[in-house]
Length: 426
RNA sequence: GGGGGAAUACCAAAGCGGCCAACUGGGAAGGACUGUAAAUCCUUUGACUUAUGUCUUCGUAGGUUCGAAUCCUGCUUCCCCCA
Image (cartoon, rainbow, N blue to C red; front, side, top):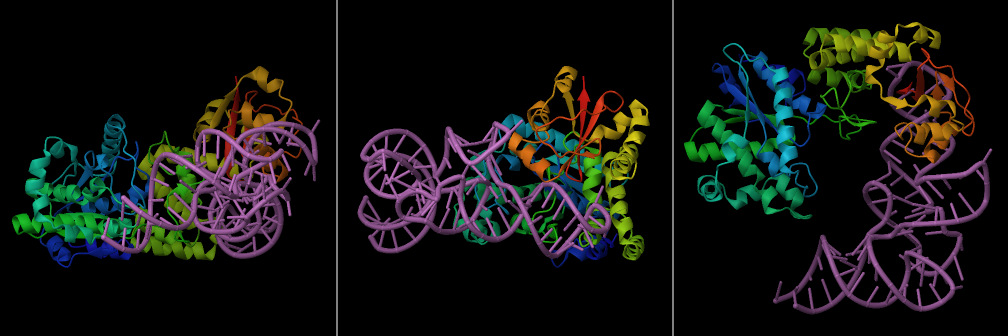
């Protein structure tokens, strides 16, 4: 029961907590929650970091509640944002909220005494009218108190709307609501949520004279301090339709040595000894990527399942291994297709392919601008030696050498060292 | 309400009548080296064009000029000072 804090501590997931938190957790099964606003149709790995706190909470024997922010998402959290955000329209928001609720369910255990729950704050806010809100919530916190928050202070210069200013009250009320209805006394989140969480604690204290607690984790950043969770393609999503399991696996595998130890602590469920072991092995033979492989395996399996993981590994071996193009050619087509499931696929009409004269045209327009966004881009890439087709380097951007189609149907296009595309002739 | 300043490519920031598709830095992308790492070095970073040419860009709409990112006017947005 009491192990949560220690667990978070050694994993480097403890940034701040209120003084009595440990005592609360030691006092038997506690209940804690984290909120996720539906700003997109999927959670991304940044959300996964905070979600892991909830997972750790449950592993320590407490009850986790994941909150989908159907209401708060309508308002916009000013934390960590340098400017006012645009509203998402309601239809999108509802869709996102449903997708996210589903994803949240995947990571928690819904059985047993400390069964998880997923709730949506839209349920208690949709019929909460403005005047009632002002009387029941707004009255309890002063402007002075609200103004002091970093999330607000950072926006004083650039401007903050009344709407976003009010965000902390909404989140504060969530906490209060969960306290009242589910005796939830702990809220967790990224360190940028500290201000919002303490608003909730304050609200509970003033309305109920009760004590509630907070734990925040450091925001995961890259070694250079920049924002974590973006790959070349953009955000790394948990939804396999948005980031394929192959790309997801690759993201972890490509983790830098200096970041891997931090990442494996936060994102994997591997134990302290196992990790120490891996680090030792890794240090002895860094080129074998022990740490990265273990990290990628643990996370990919948990997010996408064992078989998707295995396919991703297989695809990686084929694409990055020494296997010659002939080997790819010899794979049964069904295997080949499943292996390449994760790499972007581009369908091109057979006739168009056969009459193709120009490499730059092929890499841009013919392949629907999915490989290169313009012909000049394609030309520059080729001039820099960055393009391979069927593993063969392209040197002339004006000509179109004839390539043997793999399996009489596919072309493997490589942009740079790690970006593959499968062109399918139809 | 009065006065002043600013809007430049992904970001930051030069340019202040022709030499500007626009200095420089960051970021990003590609290459070499490696371990699908780091560091380092090189290249690229508006589009089209099998080159040094054309077209579209410097908040927005007009104007002055042979010629404007650079000057003028209206509009929009933002910042600062006074009330």
